[in-house]
Length: 464
Image (cartoon, rainbow, N blue to C red; front, side, top):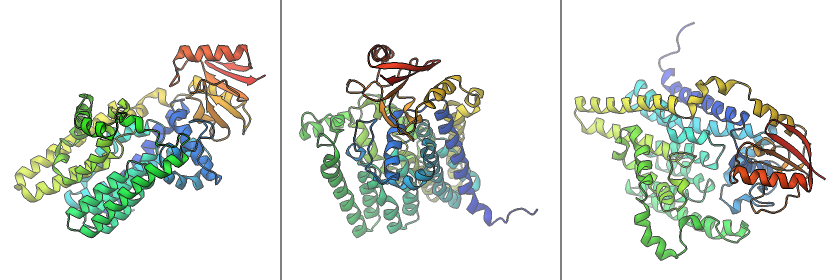
């Protein structure tokens, strides 16, 4: 059989890189789930919303609170696009595969642009480093989140910015307003970039549309669906002292505590800090500002899913910085700079495989049958479809595809009224301590529920 024509290989390389990472991300997510590594907060919550969309219902999540419409929490109607596939394959694994596909395809435009400018080897190194970046790995390692939709939208939009297809860039970025309520600011930043490149009318319309969308979402849509009639995360901004207090304290919040500076270093070090020399990288400012002025410490850490949207921006920043260097630097100097960048990418790939979640795929225990998972599944199989169940956080996502699930114990400390309770007596389930869980379980077993079955660390109860 003859080799593929040389002209076919450049077109296939970006999709090959994206396809490889699609498989890797899927394996990380699914093995986590099968070994009880996923949770109701957040995989179960999102599955409840998508399950509702699939049945043409409002996106209610009983895990969040009984009857809670999830659009009153965060604004993410783009989740409805998964509903048709979920209707055919009603499983949390559907969400994980969709997430892996969205993140995998985001590598395509990055590799494509890098390949056009530097050739296949450098493009492959950058693509692999991007795919193994800690921002993407920690995302697939932590359940499912709506922000994964923003990653390919940003990647394709920035590709259009770098190739001066201004209208296409805006069209790719426009759906960001349907992903989460803070992302209109990123759309506005793209509008500003377009404006500064001489497309003033298009840039102004993009900025205006983005800001109008933000105000509509935060002041009208979310409050209309929130039981308290307001945006529920206002307290995260620490604005108890009002808007003036928020504005005056914001500069200090952007740099303190030092944990935020560590996050900045972690974001740009994998590109040897070269991404900082590209104007494209300024698109990280809206997301980082939103996170840094928050009093929620989870937003400042290197982990979870919060940095996923920053990864395509930073790695495109690397590609753009190298492009500028190629034009401005002597050939010898440019080769040395590119060599530094490629070495940084290779180091990032090695660290990504050995020190990050993807490394779990190399461990034998990842592929071994988990006795705990077997015990838990045996009890959950005893629960009939469409039952009303209170489940501990790590068991909830294994039932949300076929039952109505709430959290056990209830967040509001109310008495359980569900017909079934299934819980893990060993795992300290967020947000409860192991002691709290044990006391609550003992109380309900002694009063309103009887034990139906017990296997290993897991207990199944039914209301008397």
